[in-house]
Image (cartoon, rainbow, N blue to C red):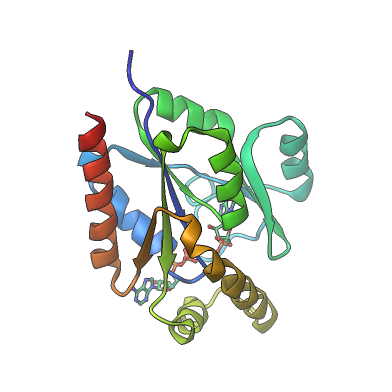
Length: 193
Ligand code: ADP
Ligand code: 5GP
């Protein structure tokens, strides 16, 4: 029988570069990673693809899935819901894939309660500074002034939680940060054998 894959968690404030770094890590085929596509009620951004970046669903649909216990974890983040599909993650882990969850901190704590610590590696991505974080969110051209303020407020709260994570990674350059994470995952895979 195959050993279940790891759960690799990537968290950190909005705009820190989680998606950018995650896409870079997943390119490394030797790590056997697969991205857990979350469901969200937030509006699709320019360039995002339904079923690839997220499963974009209505609030009614999301709440129906909550009621049916379909989420491994879920959270409300800046007026929208986000959740991890339980059966998707279970199926891939059973195939031996290491599943990458890119989720907020409240979601991370829910996941940590459900699995053995030996099954999980947690990363918290930080920007070089708060000024740079704001610059990155603005540069993405996805937010209104109001949603930007909400995300920055949430960022300050999340940045107090770094000590809850196995590794804190400064995203100065995406390729460098991705390499740091990839090396950690590679070593964890080698140790498990
Ligand atoms: P998150 O997923 O954490 O919200 P994104 O990956 O969407 O963040 O990155 C936010 C913005 O910052 C994007 O426009 C992205 O291209 C840019 N970005 C990501 N990493 C860096 C970096 N190391 N230096 C400069 N810009 C970056
Ligand atoms: P964004 O709207 O920028 O894509 O995501 C906002 C926040 O929601 C980010 O912190 C992101 O990691 C988080 N997020 C995305 N998917 C999930 C999920 O399935 N569960 C939880 N708890 N958070 C998620």
